[in-house]
Image (cartoon, rainbow over all chains, first blue to last red; front, side, top):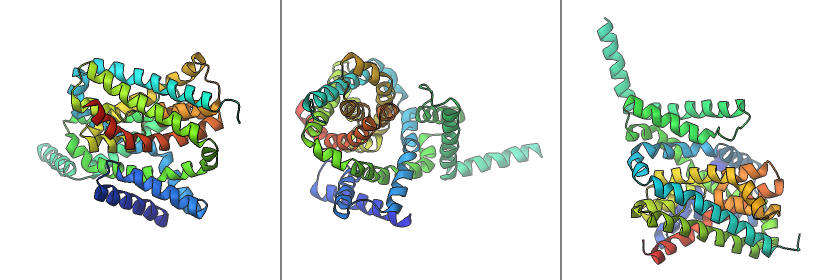
Amino acid sequence: MVGAITLLLVCQLLGTIIAHAAGWPIPGPVLGLVFLLALLVWRGGPSPALHETSGGLLRQLGLLFVPAGVGIVNELHVIRIDALAIAVAVPVSTLLALGVTGTLMQILTRGER
Amino acid sequence: MRGLAGNDLYHVWVYLQSGPQLGLVATLLVWQAATWLDRRTGHAAWSNPIMISIAALAVLLLATGTSYRAYFRGGQYVQFLLGPATVALAVPMYANFATMRRNLVPILVAVTAGSVTASVSAMLLAHGLGAPRDVVISMAPKSVTTPIAMGISQDLGGIPSLTAIFVLLTGVFGGLVCIPLFRLLRIVDRRAQGLAGGTGAHGLATARLLLASETAGAFGALAIGLNGLITAILVPFLVRWLGF
């Protein structure tokens, strides 16, 4: 488990260092994800420990969102002032994204399995 | 005597507020309670443990006059795990790697189109309805899974906690509407449904679709990682292009 966490953190650190050094606007952990994916493809899959640790982290993923969300106490004024913009932009853009992605994928894969 | 005890309690409270324990334990306890409630209600649509935990902790902070800074001294330890959790998304992505390779071009085209649609329409609508720049930027990565979305928002000068709220609202709304919308638009292919859910409304829509089909769930998981990646790469250019 410690080995698996170390691997995740090393990928994150490498991603952060490279993104910063190259001046790319990509979050370090996202680049770390790419590194780990490349490693998994190269090695032919995750070790049992990595499988278990990543599964454990991702099963509790919701908990990790909570502290940032609580930051809403500092943004209540923003939400009150821009309530209309938020109430329109969030649902409409979500409907559009769902519809565009689903329709395109269905058309592009039509006839194959 | 009583006055002295009250005074001691006050000192304990002040002491705890300066350290990480209170915020950390409050987060974990509230989360335990919210997930217990979710199980008890049989995962009802209204019982979203993330939303309930955030609301309960926000009310707790406001009621006790605790600042977010003081809370975050503990909350930061939970939040830190978002980094390794983002990296860990590579494992479920790898599990779908063979399927992904077979449909690589359609997947890349559909997810890229969905990513651009989500961020451009959200930014234009928010801007058109009078939201200031930092709110518009915070809106851009709202269809992406939270750890990635917050990173994008931070890097571009948005408000990460506001982005976290937009991401949650997107997920809750997307989870509720995805199945009726697919019926309306006659999107019947499970792969297309999963890919759309994961791209448009990340994990919360994917969780909903997983109940109906394993294939949809797998494509949803794939789309969450891929959309995060594509959005992280494209949004900085889209923001510059739109002139925000």
